[in-house]
Amino acid sequence: MGWTLHTHADARQLAAHLVDSLQASLQAGLDEHGAAMLALAGGSTPWPVYERLAQAPLAWQNVTLLPTDDRCVPVESPASNLRGLAEAFAPASGVHLAALTVPDGDPDASLIQARAWLARHRQDFDAVVLGMGTDGHTASLFPQAPELACGFDPALEACRFDPDPLPPEAPYPRISLTVGRLLRAGAVHLLITGAAKRAVLEEAIALNDPQRHPVMAVLGAPAVDVQIHWSP
Ligand SMILES: O=C1O[C@H](COP(=O)(O)O)[C@@H](O)[C@H](O)[C@H]1O
Image (tube, rainbow, N blue to C red; front, top):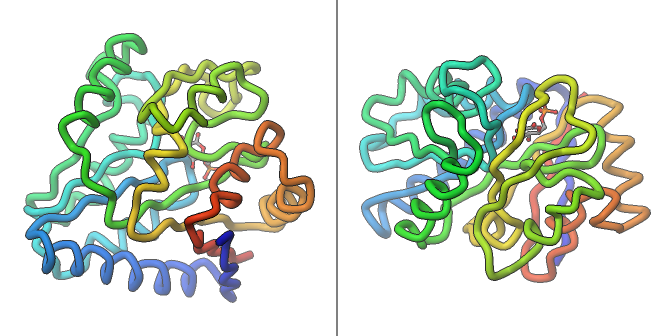
């Protein structure tokens, strides 16, 4: 199916549009199953969206949030995506946060924990929010990494990534959901801002090489219409 590009005038409009969509996905999950689950990107871009979503009047005690990927760091580290989610969703009283990493960030123990959690929670996500780095990585699927074969393996749900070179803004091993697990969702959103990422997105689409730009493994998936949200 591919993707649909939504161009917004600014980050505020983008957040309003995406929050409406995520709120509708959550409410539909709650109405249908009595529970709902989101997988949410970390990094630096999505926090204003999450802070706004956390204000929504939802039965948060029946909602579970899981990072799409996390850095193998102690949970109190500023680099921890889980810590960022905990802060952004502090107003969402009773919300459940699930971790891909163990509290001290040990990578091997984290992968075991992540896979065990995912084995116990097989339901589709109600929605997934992905980000993209300026190298074309999404979640923690980094370009040309040896672990990409794991990240693209439909039989697996989570992998360890050791990006080489380590990204300077967060130089840590990672645990990432695989493309197959990320796409098992009622809706898949890709959130990007700024001219640099827009240029990378256009290059990725033109080259259509998931090894060079792993985000294309998501955008090229045949059965999913990924909603791309961009603002300057
Ligand atoms: O390292 C990560 O990077 C991507 C993109 O992050 P951003 O800082 O460029 O917004 C993010 O989606 C991912 O969750 C994160 O772990």
